[in-house]
View: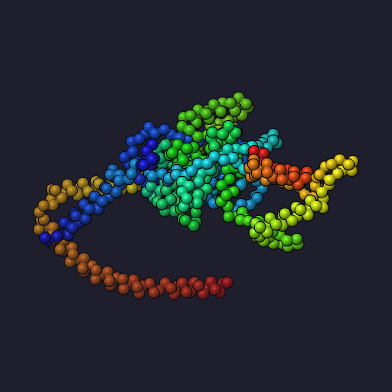
Length: 196
Length: 335
């Protein structure tokens, strides 16, 4: 078929116009719905827990990944307030809201650190070494500073060589055990931040 | 709302119509920040970072209780601490939660040239889809509140999503849930407006005569409103007193209108061409063909003529550098 210049112009104008009309007029090929990003805790396991930080004792929900199948290691995904709690009703303070970082935090030491007397640097030691050293020093301090009777002759059985400070993340049961241990050693300077 | 399909979309950036959406009765959701109740604890900031898996940033003390100096691609929510002196030598601490206000008429969306990169869901939430973002940052200049932030690594723009993933499944946004004083509230827009108006009346009764509900009409209202106790100090809070979308994106709006004009012209031309073809196009009158052939012949001759002309121009061009050279030597002498 012979194609004249005029016919070619007509054809190309039709094609261009058609393309322009489809792209700019009326025919909307876009979806009416947009896929919202998936809720990251939709398949997570909910575990109720208590905020470890202060004495208020806010309830929290820890969301962990996985169904606790034996071949998996659960990963903590998210922590937020428990709305059923009469204490905080789902709210959290900034420190409590960052509780996830207590578990997942590259900046926290992964084990006990030791700085020898006079040394500038901390070195990581094994838990066994740390426990041995602590036990040794507790024993030495207690032997040195143990008082069986005071000046008036009263039996006191106390040691004043060291004090004990319990951290806030200690649970109720752990707090009971540490208090029991320290009282047994005769420690009088005993303080716990954990009050929940 | 069906989660298989996601949320209904009211507007897409750089897309003329809203598609086939007819779910116009979807309840509108809003946050309201009661600045009177805010104690500046920043729990909302932390909750936002935690929920959205955003990394921490190195910050430094710049003489304020404010944690970060500014919003960033990884800090979508920031408590701004503005300390101002009052006329009676008193101090006012204007603390404001700064994050996306989710305008009803979003300047970012109007400015965005990438189809679907900015979406307004039917419930009013304005969300960025980074997979469609082209990193041009028109939204940054289009936003009357200076909210979106460009990330130079990914070359995309990020901002608060109003936790659309949580909202879709019936949860409240992370900042709302964390807020210990109930300063940030979330719910249906009309309920939030009702709360705000009642609170403003209370504040006015307490002596804050200029207390106001910040829900600016210039952007069609916002899906994050503020109860501002000191309404006379909006600027000190960092809130524009009359934000307007059109002034920000008027140039792009002009281009949009030109595009429509162009489309209309295309249609008109097309129809005219079609009508002309129907009337005259079926037979090719010989006189016209001859005329075309004559034109082609003339064109060939003209082409030769142009070549000669180019040569002449080329010769002519050689002269000016001499003048430039003179000028430069003169400049050297002066220096």
